[in-house]
Length: 442
Ligand code: GDP
Image 1 (cartoon, rainbow, N blue to C red):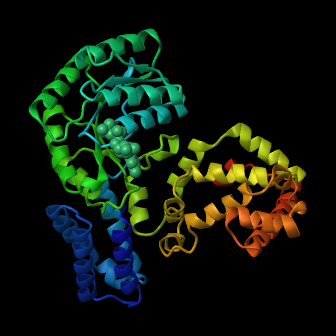
Image 2: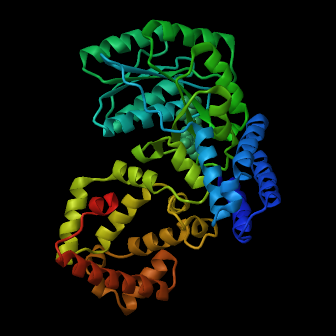
Image 3: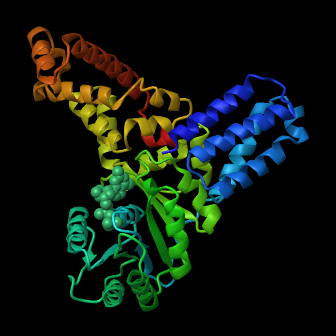
């Protein structure tokens, strides 16, 4: 999401940057381009108008045209205005005191509600909370079994009464159970419909009245574009939304909905979801400043660190560190670390979060395919070879290349690079070792 908007805006600013001093005319021309870029990204027309007017007003002011770095000043203004548009600061999940905190998830069918319920539960558990999932989508039997099976997989309790009970009763019983079992967060997966309809609204109002959730979060598929804004307005009018979760931001949605929804409805975006997999790293709290930076190509290292912390496995990291120091880090460990890294998200998305590397990602200089190739080569090695890369010569190399569908020289290259890395790690490890988390905190 946002790639094409990001490309366009960066092109506008690059052109400005080449000009040195800026005239009012330069700024106005750039703003015309910004306007087109936003409209093409499917941002709400009224929002675009106001946005461009605000930026122009500030940018044609004296500070910019008289400043030593005029283009930088314009970027700074656009950055700040984007942040304001997106809601200024992160709005965290509300906590009910006394607990449990009741969260009702609302959304159209297929928006990713059930998946998001599970992701959110996992995210909360990572934070040391005790979530309970509640299957209140009784009209789609598959939703109940989907939630039950996700709960089993993740080891998170699911309250389900099948399709016989009424949703408000299910919610009430779930909250009672939560109190008995010292659950901290109750996440209610409500029914979705193909479109907003009266019975759906009435049912949400009934659940609302029965358990008074402090969070009423709308789950919206980012791919539906401006329709998302309309859906949000409608649900907000009936049940008073406390937040929005955009899903499928890994898709090629243009992002306009995410940029408009706060300005139009006043409801804050609280989380972004990406990927079909239910993992703690596929849902992340929404930070306006970070997204604004990402859009303007300044990277988003903070979110990357949060994702890394979400998948960070202390035990495994300690084991790895020991091996590094001893110089016994082998291809097995390499593969394990690589797979751990992959949990951060698709490679291109990760690169896009690192300042300066977003171009690398977009121009596909390093791709998912390269990583797959490396994995394939390692998979084609025997356990012995992985533990002792020195064995990988002549015949063995040919066999590995054949097995992985690669060229012998690609195998050689990987083995050589690996040896080089081993040597380097050993040297670094010798000096007291490195804790990857320490490195990240700096
Ligand atoms: P519900 O009908 O709203 O409960 O939606 P589901 O949770 O069943 O999700 C509908 C489909 O969207 C499923 O195929 C999910 O795997 C998929 N999905 C959910 N969230 C995401 C996401 O963030 N990214 C992608 N690519 N797919 C998602």
